[in-house]
Length: 408
Ligand SMILES: Cc1cc2nc3c(=O)[nH]c(=O)nc-3n(C[C@H](O)[C@H](O)[C@H](O)COP(=O)(O)OP(=O)(O)OC[C@H]3O[C@@H](n4cnc5c(N)ncnc54)[C@H](O)[C@@H]3O)c2cc1C
Image 1 (tube, rainbow, N blue to C red):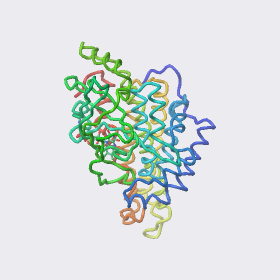
Image 2: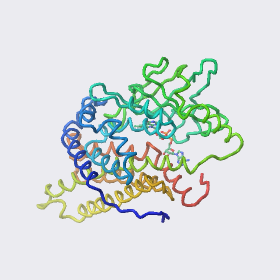
Image 3: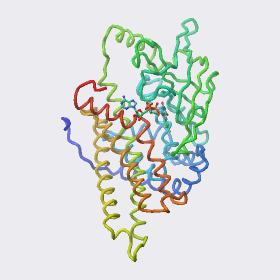
Image 4: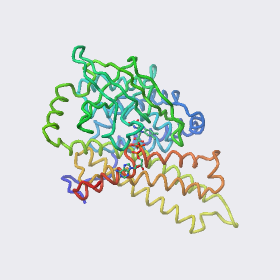
């Protein structure tokens, strides 16, 4: 459907195969055995993230090499699929800081990137995390509805942030909080800017910590901003660029919507890869189970009713991986044409939710027990229909891209 200038070869190079196997090994050795424990504890798994930092999987360098140093775009989705195959809650604890890093990379200058992104990670001896704070209790999908204000105090060259952010991964436990604030409420989402809140800044505190359905090893909480003052240099992109952009919007220019779409689209295949990893875990587990479990004197896989579910799972997993890899490749080449990143995320979220539910069915009563991992995978899968743009928001983006119309 897309008109692209170069052809897409869905093959991993030697480095990517090595990274895939390395992450898989870590996921099998260090995530699978403790996944149940951290799900039950509902706490951020610091020791496991430290282990990931020790081997170089959690860290700014890994992200930089995977995201910016890979012209094919395939390294991150391949690594993320393996990580989330191991465990999604711990996987998100490891990947959560990348949200903050992506927020800094999309709006910040090169100097801001170099100063703040390493502080979202720290190192194995002094581990740090980052948080990207956009959503609010009354405005998740509707980004034009944010109420957190950002007011410039010219006399002190400081920005003053006030409001409460909701559902923030690593909220309140992060070293660096990247906060989206409303600079000019009359401009809707075009009147926003992003700010770094450095460690130890007065006025920032953690609100409620959410008790969640799944990905329970990942920390999610409110972030309260009460007269938080940050230096002028914490405005991502700088004041001059912000003033120029706001002036263009006030003058009626629509801005570069295409550039904004490319940025959002580029992160979606990685989120889709998270869901794919969960779906593959559920598929492999239920396939093995179906070959071993006997009913009516034969393995349950000998019934078409079971075997065909597994056949569908296998086909859907392959199709979704192909979509994710192609979307990742298009993202790396800035060649999205029809919201392929959103297509990948939409399809992968639905796949994970469906495949994990079917896996419970294949395991019968054991599938419903917390002694077996498939019920956890089902709880973990559902978030992929919700965060980073819900199922309906992906449909909205795709329908606008394919029609060229402002579908509401
Ligand atoms: C575990 C978790 C972690 C998160 N981490 C972060 C984070 O780190 N940073 C951050 O900023 N946010 C984060 N979020 C917030 C997340 O991005 C939002 O929950 C999500 O965008 C949906 O917003 P909402 O919950 O307000 O739902 P709403 O926007 O209120 O949507 C409710 C329902 O209405 C549908 N809907 C809304 N608008 C439309 C429309 N125009 N057309 C059709 N249907 C529509 C939605 O699809 C959904 O089904 C996280 C959320 C969770 C649960």
